[in-house]
Amino acid sequence: MRTRSAIFRGAKQPISVEETILQDPQAGEVLVRVAATGACHSDYHAVDGRNEAPMIPPLVMGHEGAGVVEGIGAGVTDFAEGDHIVFAIRPMCGKCKYCSTNRPNLCNGIGNEPGRMRDGSTRFTTPEGETLYHGLATFSERTVVPEWSLVKVPNDVPIERLASIGCAVVTGVGAVVNTAQVTEGATVAVWGCGGVGLNVIQGAVIAGASRIIAVDVDDKKFSFASDFGATDTIDASKLNAVEEIITMTNGGTDYTFEVIGNPQTTRAAFEATCPGGTACMVGVPPEGGEVTIPMRPLFFDRRLIGTSAGTGRPRVDFPWFIELYKQGRLKLDELQSRFRPLDEINEAFEDMLSGEVARTIVRP
Ligand SMILES: [Zn+2]
Ligand SMILES: [Zn+2]
View (tube, rainbow, N blue to C red):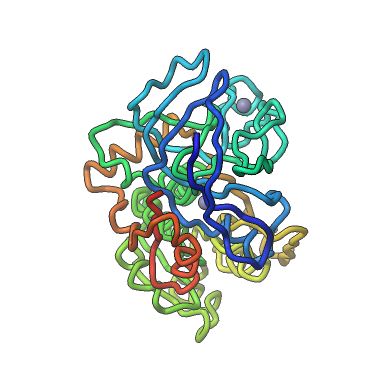
């Protein structure tokens, strides 16, 4: 069928929105009409050339979204036409070591090459027959994905409200609750208040943190941070955030989260923990990036840990998030600052870079 998709054709050039040809879903695959999809920084890392490796052009972009099932391939029994779904950024084979031990975020049982389906082919081409690579390909009116990349969600919540659950929400809230396991009453500091950082902040609220300190260099982001539950803010363009946090908390916070993917701020996050504290790197690291930390503080029971996709268990966590949202305990509406059509995908990323939005949501 003919559809329209946003295609990455190489770093430092605009994403182009083009007519594409989408094949029918094969065995174990599902055709989805994308209702809403978030402009997430991890796609932009390819566009600006910082981290191009996983993105082989020409590639249909997008990995965070929600939609409605329009067709199923042979053997699909968990999904039917009309079902509402949320895309999970990591697939879940259900059989590998990680899927079998409650760590499906680390699933290694699929064995597909980046940008291709398991059989090595792709489902998208241009009308001229050019192969288009893709993962979830949510920056498209329609997409075809393996069933193990989808989570069925209740039909009684507006589907576009769930657009960011599969990436920003699970990565942020999951880092706090699943990975670092922040305890009630703990103190928390967060570097970076973009879409994921705001979800780290609301994750800390859900976990019962006593004090949540938001650090950024863009003061436009602090009103979002406060709305999502930050108790204090530090403008790191004007102040030394580590010194400020150590002074404010009498020795450092119990948990810190780095949501930028930068060696300096990862080190700063480690240095701002108290003895026994945990620093968690949430941001996507640059290709070949390295971080150094001082050994003496490490000696005092501190931990520096990583988190991938919020150590999320999509089929457990997504329904939980939706339940919290229905009860007013998880902010999703507030995350959606602006809506744009697919043709304005480049503008959606400009919104993100401007710091004026929590998230721009594209409605293909
Ligand atoms: Zn993302
Ligand atoms: Zn697996």
